[in-house]
View 1 (cartoon, helix red, strand yellow):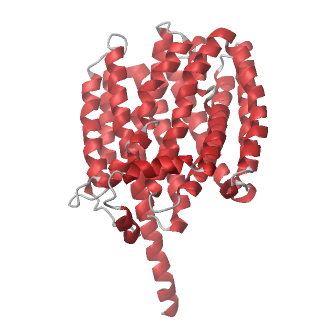
View 2 (tube, rainbow, N blue to C red):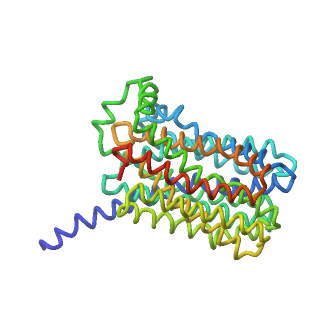
Length: 421
């Protein structure tokens, strides 16, 4: 009997944790499927219409709401309905609006109504970015300290499954069935994913006294956000993160137009995303999480930059050798996502470390959005450079810069006590 009593609380705790992370998985997944589909498909459509790489880089501005979350994140913490719940007040209505937008979007044509589609994608990004703020806040509210690593892992899993589905399965469906059918199926899947989110009863926050201390400060959230950004450690982190994002995202978006120019169709690209990109991203996230605990931030930065240098050099070789076969391109895409998984875990870990406090969700959104803003700002510049230099010279140059980033990044990390290890 004593043994049963000792085991039962642990068993109940495990079930409670499983319930939390399962719910968070659906919340993170609900944001990603259509966005990953559009993120992959739109550059292909634009390139087939003869749009320059620099112009394609500017179209990533439709994803700018993810970089601007810091401007209004405090509102998600401040305004809500106590009857519905602090987080569900934002999550459920916004996901419902997105659900109704998808069938309307299906009526448009990517070839004839591209401007309208880009505008709608911008609105959907604004919706999903706001949902993301609420979900991050909900995770912060309900997860115990020893459950937070599971929360980070499930966030990455939600992205990977969303990428595998949106940029893999639905890219294949689009090639075979067309835009309208694909959007209707995405809408049906979105409805199924939303069901457990809508039906669940919001869990109370674990640290009520901290919420009470910050509630009612009004505009103080904005000034606190600015003072938080100005802290020396955070400014140094943003410098490091900018270098890391340059190492990761510098050529990622340009590989899609490159493989399109090499004759790869969406059907093949979707298959490669399913069999190479998504599994390698998940493996990279798991490997990054395991290695991070053993090696620390500086050594993981070195590992990530070395992989990035190899990926970019291999990309140049793939293009120069006209290696349009599925194996060479699949290895390139898989290695890119392996690098992205490792680097994402590194950035999220540093952001979480710097965001601890009574307004952790808002701080997390501030740092995340600023990192995203830098990444989006580099896309048009990188596209223009690639237009001038060509794919081969561009990726070789980026590979060299990845090695140089190791020295600058590790030097900056040593100056941040919380992240120095």
